[in-house]
Image 1 (tube, helix red, strand yellow):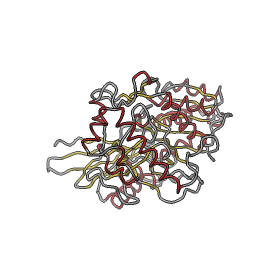
Image 2 (tube, rainbow, N blue to C red):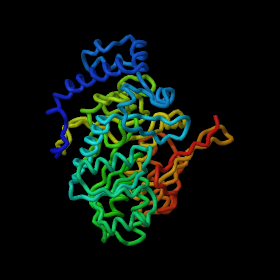
Image 3 (spheres, one colour):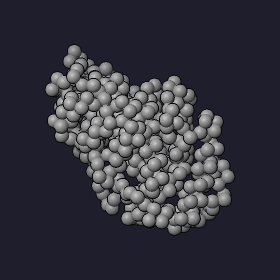
Image 4 (cartoon, rainbow, N blue to C red):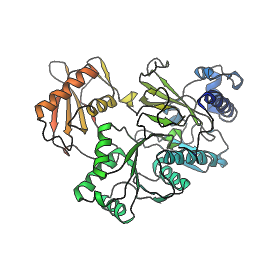
Length: 430
């Protein structure tokens, strides 16, 4: 368990007081040093002295991606620019980039959190970590690499793509842990399978980030790579980057580092807290971030809290996998559909693979129609197309309360990507 990079509080009952101290520091720091935050807080009628309990978090104003774009090039800046040692940018492709800046303390805190992820995954100085994500302005490459170095493991910064190079390193350097997007993980796993080299590898662990994962995708990657465990790592550039949480061996949610930020789950429409077990938008408030602190930052990512104690023994709280984004939600015949909900359904259907596409169209009769194209699982040859299609259709109806046509495709038919795979196609015209 976490011995080198443990939580910064001793027990679950100590967390509220710890977070209150950090919240008061963040509000005071932002109010004193950021003209943007001072104006926003004064507009909400809140001053640092008003923060007396965690409940006062609800009095604070929200921030969002528009605030980052409007504040370009250094939004949310709350320190003297001379204290900035690095910038990173989101992977967004529309409008001005969202640039985030870091002090040395911010970098140190981030690497502590990232090394904690590796430790929770059971990695040590004996491991060899192959990093197959993008470098440069994106936070992934630097985070995965420097976090592994903080842990003391051998680091192999292979970058994305180039499957021939990846396989060469897996074999020659005897990589034990693989870090990549879920899509890249599937692509590489299928290449390993095609080359017939799985039994010559020393891989034990996979850490996947940057996009949603499903049980079906994880099962496929585990099978084809022969790894013992695959972990889900969330990441948001605005919140340091990847490394702010990790799933554990109990496979019962993602532990998030509540000693570095407060996570709220709010209804995207009403902005009220959701009920336990319900899906909500992830809203972040940092507790010790210096250069660009976050106060109630709306991420648009959707998940649900996982209640109770984790069987793994870690005291840090949990949330479920990322189920999608509030702005990626599709309204189909009056029902809100999140991409992660389709993942969840397919993961429960024997014979359904991890890869699918949801297509939404509007026909001449004025009605909307949904077609779900689903690949077979690698070992589903004995199930007929009709039987598998019918089972998926029934489960979609039962779980999502919608009817759709289901088209079964051979394994490997849908496109693969080293980055994020697109799975929703809405061709309706409004």
